[in-house]
Figure (cartoon, one colour):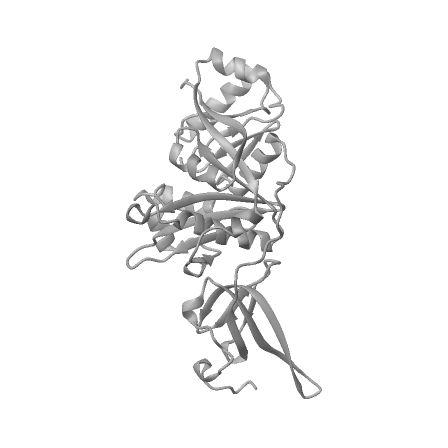
Length: 336
């Protein structure tokens, strides 16, 4: 069995390297027991296939790798059939904010009492703001002065993430006294299972554990600044279980997306479509494939964050069943 010919000559192998990123079912020769072959099956995302062999990531997230010569059978399979449910997991605004922070972890983090100072070379306000939940361990004026100093040392503006409800009324009053400027963001949630059944052309989407050069080329928040790109790559790949989706195009991706799976929650971000490919349903398709993978790992709720002024994205998420859980603001402190 270990001396099989080229994979192309094996009739039960109906996948090839072009299927990397798709959900597949494969059978491999695992061992010989008492002189007889023992086979093992695995269903999951075909993460890679190169000269070193194949790697498939099943629902438990632990990659299964083996040499190509041990591949006995393989085929692509439909998206994970998530159970129908119209309910989202229970989580209050504070819990959702902490989940979002874990799925988008800053490069540098430091505790200030129960607050968390976060910095990532200026890549997104979420990764460059203090999450002000709980007691900072100092009187508020002193705590906010410490926040201003911490960000000034890093050459960054000082943002405070204020959650409503969640952050204290005293904090809001102190920020108002300092004439902080606010930028509202909506946190939206939805049941996950219905998302998996939306969109068309799911087989066009490729999943990966990493954001490669093509994915990053479509991500509009990363420019030509090398330091910013390094921070972005670290933030993007942080989180409990992160997946990147790509719809390949003739020269560059038509659409991309990202999802961080954290227990019962799937947190979506970076859903972007090339300008010439918009209004074709690609954003929905990308989210459906990511949702199916998250459901395969046990998630049942979807969440995302969208700026309150982004009316186009809000309209799309309305159609997909998302509703607003709460609002938070990035309050920019004046420079000292």
